[in-house]
Structure formats: C-alpha cells, structure tokens
Length: 193
Ligand SMILES: CC(C)(COP(=O)(O)OP(=O)(O)OC[C@H]1O[C@@H](n2cnc3c(N)ncnc32)[C@H](O)[C@@H]1OP(=O)(O)O)[C@@H](O)C(=O)NCCC(=O)NCCS
Image (cartoon, rainbow, N blue to C red; front, side, top):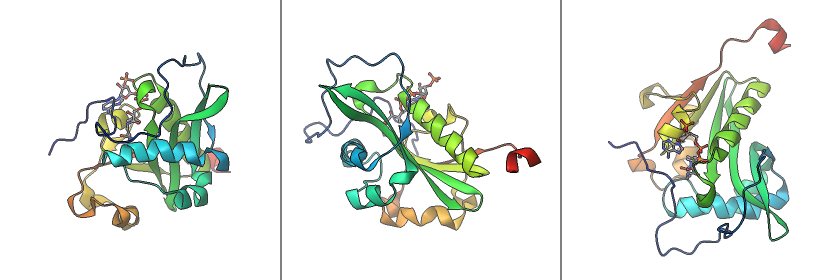
C-alpha cells in the first residue's frame, strides 16, 4: 500500500473550484490561526470540499461545520479587501483521553510554506489545554503529520471511538488513510490543576 501523496494536493483537473484566486495576493509576513466563527463556514467549506472532490479528505457539509464550529481554527488573509479563509483544521474530542485532528486544509497556492504546520501546532496546543492525553488523525499525508510528531499506528490497536466518523466516509470499505497518533508526556499535578 502506498501511503505517500505528493504535495501540493489539488482537486481533479477540470473540476469546478470555488476557491479564491490567490495568484496575485501577497502572503502576509506574519500569519496566525484563530478560532473559527460562523461567518467562516463558507470559506472553510470551499477549502475542505475542494479536497473532498479529489477524494483526499472527507467532505463536510454546512450543517456539520455550523454544529461543530467550536472545533475549528482558521487562518485568514485579506483578499480584495475581504477577510478570506485560506486554511482550516478541526480538533474533535473523541473520548476521555483522545482528541482527533480533522479536516486540515490549506489553499493549494499556499501549500508547503508552513501554513499547515501552524494550524496543526495550534490544534495540538488546544488538545493539551483541553486535557487530552493523545491526539489522533486519519490522513493521506502521513509525512506532514510525522513532521509534527505523529507516528503511524496499527489499525487493530485503535479505539472503537475513532471508527464512528468513518462510517460516513465513501471509502469506508476500502480505506487508504493512515491512522496516526501523537502522545503527550505525562502531566504534572500543577498542569492538571
Ligand atoms: C497536507 C497539508 C495540510 C500540508 O499543509 P502545508 O501548509 O502544505 O504544509 P507545511 O508547509 O506546513 O509543511 C510542514 C512539513 O510537512 C511536510 N509536508 C507537507 N505536506 C506534505 C505531504 N503531503 N507529504 C509529506 N510531507 C509533507 C513539509 O515538507 C514540511 O516539512 P519540513 O518542516 O521538514 O519542511 C496541505 O498540503 C493540504 O491542505 N493538503 C490537502 C488536504 C489534506 O491532505 N489534508 C490533510 C489530511 S486531513
């Protein structure tokens, strides 16, 4: 089984893209992520579903994004005077010790410039603040997640809670994604209080 995907990753040629054209937009020298707001859902949906159309990630409809907006972070830049979502990612708590990184997407024009790293590092930090012991993801970009401290895990060792979301995936019976886990060091008593 091949687990590597070459980046940048784009939608299939010929498919309709709803992403903003960033070809003449300078990338600000300082980028940071923030928690997503309801008004970001259209931009997040365009990004996620661009890659879902290419079967690189699971599609997320507006109902899911509105109802789970508190899971998400976005990075925005000004495009033609409008704050525009160029990257997003979510952190969903699955169980008492486990949180999942979901729907990490970076606009194709901005890939390989540290934007994905920035958003996932902030999601990892959110997981730590929430008290998780482990962070999990299913991905077709294992090299990206291993550069952030995740390691591939044997599917047979995964908790049943990680499979609930998979039942909604069109690739459920022929999944080609790699399960990856990051373990936090044990917390001191001060960190727990
Ligand atoms: C995967 C994705 C989120 C990476 O974001 P990015 O902004 O391009 O990545 P970064 O520039 O922050 O890269 C961080 C590190 O990961 C590496 N990396 C990035 N994408 C990679 C990939 N597809 N495969 C292997 N390594 C990758 C980079 O080389 C970099 O390593 P370095 O620190 O040693 O230089 C982005 O390509 C994307 O949106 N892909 C489509 C959707 C997707 O696959 N999402 C992830 C699974 S849900």
